[in-house]
Length: 330
Picture 1 (cartoon, rainbow, N blue to C red):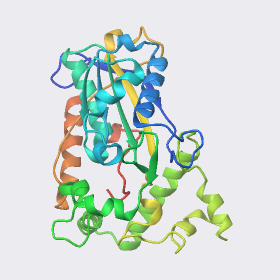
Picture 2: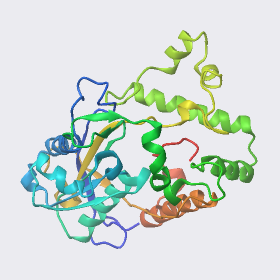
Picture 3: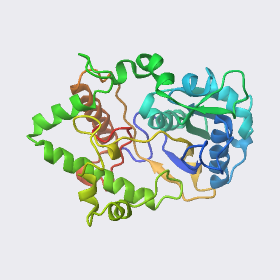
Picture 4: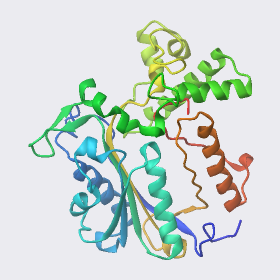
């Protein structure tokens, strides 16, 4: 590891500000009802600026991420449409869309941007409005509930080769990935079920402590109401049914509306701002379609390899691993 550098670039980068909106359904939450995508992203951006102690004029460039802006918000260039909501209209920006890894890509792009010397202070954020759809001919704040009829005609385009099974049999290929992993490492179905339920349990424990989380009711409370003494018994029960060969209801991420932003700058100037900076030690990327089950593991290994090589760290040095995906089996 070369101290003070990101990969092959010349300088280190640190996070100096973060901001996030509550995650939930704008149609059901009175505090969120009527908010548009621009307001969601803009609010998170302004929070990040306040957290860092900077003003909109200090931002040199921003990245806007959204997994499917055309479908959910009828927007082809959402970065331009949201800029005026947080005072950066006319500033340079890029919109990007990489499905479930959009947030990771946004951070990676911002870090590499600053590390390369292109800009000094860069904001990167993502927004999703996944609980509803725009109403044709109406203002953006008027939205309708998503139905199966809304999704089905565009499902092939939405999923594409990123998630579709290579040989048919369903749009989402997570069971294929799990089969491969299970066979390679000699696991049983019950062991896979136990691991996924344990992940669900710990995910909910974290959500209970997070005031911005969508679901905050402890599994202990849900289990008790259903007559279970142990929350794991509830998670293994028909009250938490399987929706695929392996995934149960609690293993699928719910649709939510929400947004979050980060601000990065060169580490050498990071200490002049409001918060204690967090240095980014390294980033790694790899991209393949997931129609073939082995690709899921290959791209994860490759991205991890890049990070370990860039930082000199080893797996045993890692204290916490966070994985973002809309199905636990990934």
